[in-house]
Image 1 (cartoon, rainbow, N blue to C red):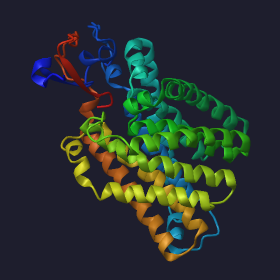
Image 2: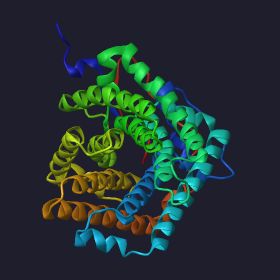
Image 3: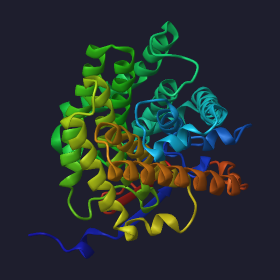
Image 4: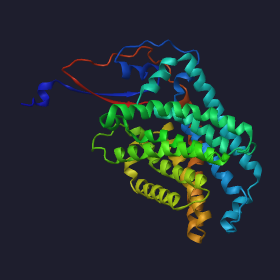
Length: 394
């Protein structure tokens, strides 16, 4: 006979946020108490992989603007207006994205050297590990939008390999676990941020297609899409109340838009045109976008206080705008061009607002004073059930 909840001991709900060194994710995984020495550079303890959302957004904006301003046979008045923008504006945007990504990459490299245990904890966490794809995605997007390096050059090819190798290594880690540990494990760890692993493969596929490496592009595309189908079905069928993503990370739901949008762009580059497969993936992403924007209450709690998680809105919307641009080039008409312009303007507006808001909250990048350097033990008693709500990208 089942015991009543009152007979099983008290129910403890432990909410852990990694806003400072005292709450390192390593303790969530090992159930041990860890003492961390104060850092001479406290910003390194704050610069987790989740901050790469900012560079992802800027790099994708640079790619969108490159596509909009480059010459083509589209004579629509709305598109011609973008070509009137001075080329220096695009170079400045690309340079800003480059500066941001280089700065974040250097900070995270120092974090790896000086706070390896914190990086290891991110690697072992079901949310944190997905953001380790973000640096490679950002560099690949920046490479594709570069005004100085063309896809046919040796520099482009060498850099492609340099940025893709980390993606493949993480693929082996994540997809290998899904394959060997089975459905129960995947249904436990799968969350919207898991789609970053798929996006990493798709961005790499598009970059390979730009170089004319069709076989490499097909390899990366098939690897990403096969696991996207499994992941999408798993997330679609998750049970009510089984949402392991904290409320503050709800903007990550917009990654549901980013994966099919990037897939449509990548397949368009591989096939050489925006064919039926690309169109179907674009329509899926457009439907998911409408489904999310029509449910603002889903993001109500995450919008009460500014957090770097807000940047999760920008990147998927920009990728959707890029897909809409490719669609308007294939299917010419007033509606398709208007859709492209609306999505492009919306993505730019969201990115611009996030830049302003982040600048106003620049102090969030510095840890608060007076933090304890010792983390408490998590309860391990068999008579108590512990529900752990974790945020690794706050």
